[in-house]
Length: 403
Image (tube, rainbow, N blue to C red; front, side):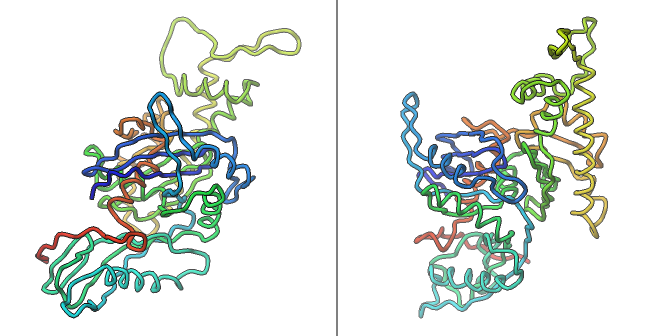
């Protein structure tokens, strides 16, 4: 289904607020506006450090006015990204009897089957909260199938096979309180890596099965994706800022200078005859202290080795009890931290994945891997239309089930 009406997607990370306003047409995302506003440290672990300050910052950017682009948007509702804290994904199915006398599927039948699934998973965890139902397929009489709600089709019974996403309750409440506090209605919560893998599923160069690594500023997320579907995720407390802070500390410079040096050089393997310093600092005794590319590489590699150790441990945990051959799945890197020069070449020999690739979104106006989750949410909203919010669910095309 294509949507001409722009929709807003918001992601609040540990360091920034990201907003993308856009819509989907024929499976592609078109962006009207995007913004990343860095705020310093927003969250520490699972908690917001200063919720009121984050609310004020979000409130300040919800009215978008760009004279040069002739854009004026007031964000009143939004899709909100949720990190996969204690993510549990359940595969389930439910059957309902079609209510109408003519046995034609109506909106109420779709709502009923969603309610049955929702109620069936409410008691599964005391700490987790229901996030979303992702429909896989609807089954009608005579084995007919439909990917979307088969409104108007004739059948006595309707079966829905679906995946249910649940996440740590306090995490969901924390994010929704921030967004609601800024006067924005939460249209839908979407699990961050699920949004990312939905966008990746539209890209030809991305395989069906892979290990997804989203490298943020302060945290990274590792996810297993099979047949283009999210299976599990875990969060690593390590991000690109770890490298920045090591440079800042060692070179005795400001954070913004350290970030600039990190992004300019990355892991620099170039051999040059001329040995120029990458940074010069003035000592208290009046002398200059010079730092060279070897010094920078040592710092960067030292921090990356910490990350890779955590990454391998997390992959082992996610694949615990599963065939170890899956550790060789291709690794896909996204997120702002994936832009570090030389990163994939450094990681490849230190992980079991057969390949490591950095993927950039092919979306005009948002070609930034830090925006993957926001862009993916726009696709999710269009592809998996929420039944409870829409008066007119998409009509599905019914086919014969050959199984």
